[in-house]
Length: 121
Image (cartoon, rainbow, N blue to C red):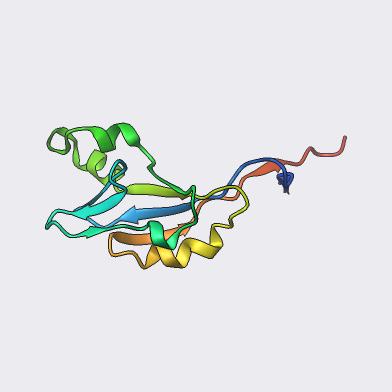
């Protein structure tokens, strides 16, 4: 028996991110708020985004680690990131802009969170 999902209440405070994967050779410097390639090219993404937006690594511990000491799988995991928009902003509005950034290989909507529906007794 499949239990259908129930959307979260609109006041739930959970935001859907834009998930994206960096192109090989790119990284994000959170302090400088810049993407940087191994060849020295830089890109600042914040002109495309609303004030209060955060860009985060999905696995921040690996992103801070010495890349030379990481396995190939761990280095791959450092490419996965998210754009966390301020409350009230819809991720779908920004997915196309994120996909167009020179540092981004692929961008898609993050998963839509839902609640399980209890089966009727």
